Amino acid sequence: MERVLFGDNQFFAINHMSEDKARAQAIRFQDIDQIVRVLDDAYDCGIHVFMCTTHDRIADICDHVRSNKRRYQALKFYPCMPYAYKYANAITEFGMIDAVRRFLPDEGALGALLRGGMSIAKKDVEGIMRLLIDAEMRMFHDLPTPVIFLQNLVTDLLLGLGANTTYKLFAEYVRSAYGAEAGFITMNLPRLVDALESAGVDNPIVCANINKAGFRMCGGVKACEEAIATRRFRLIAMSVLASGAIAPREAVEYIGGLDRVEAVVFGASTRKNIQEMKQLIDELSTDRLSRPASPSPPK
Image (cartoon, rainbow, N blue to C red; front, top):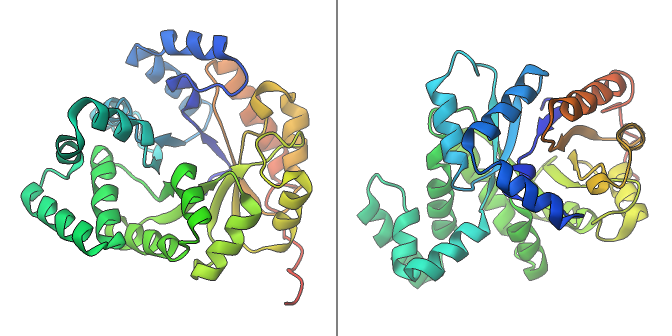
């Protein structure tokens, strides 16, 4: 993985600390050209991974990148699925059956629908999961997607249900169907790394909130730091600024002091802020980020 990843929260009015900022961003980024300008700023600052949801408007970004392959020849996408609000809104607007039809893959849609019906009848979790993954991945065709993430809404729901084997099924399918590694976004880092290990997902990629303020860190800072120091996984840190509560240098210095932080994902809407974060992470990455971790204690 590259050290610095660019996220998409700012494009879809997600701000965990300020509704006013969220509304302002929603107005600004109604225009797809505004989103492209910010992505261009990130790309020109040397950030070549866009970690994004499967929001409908991401399809427009994918179309733009496919139409300008020379401009974005180094750009990679890290899709994060499912985008739950998309499904909820479609069911509300179109009803369950029509909503399902809208998300089925185009090729062999009837067969997919029949397989989906059989899967539901048999409670075949793997069959249903494959259909949904294929539907979500349609917008990324012909684009590099080396890591595909399970969104925290589903990751943590499975965690609560104790359905750990589903993590393994997800990892195996994205590898076989898309040649990608699986990633898992969570709000409960300590419990998830245990669940992934029990499911047989070796050295998993995990994206979690990591910041010195403990902002949205289930279990608290100490429990997360202990998991980072003692467990085997590859960590992507998100919410490192605690939604603006921590200054960038202070935030990055804290992250740089932890073992196993392989990457940082952040969102920003100005070139100045993007460049500042990129430079800070690069400054610390050579001798601090991803340094050899201390060995796990014997079991």
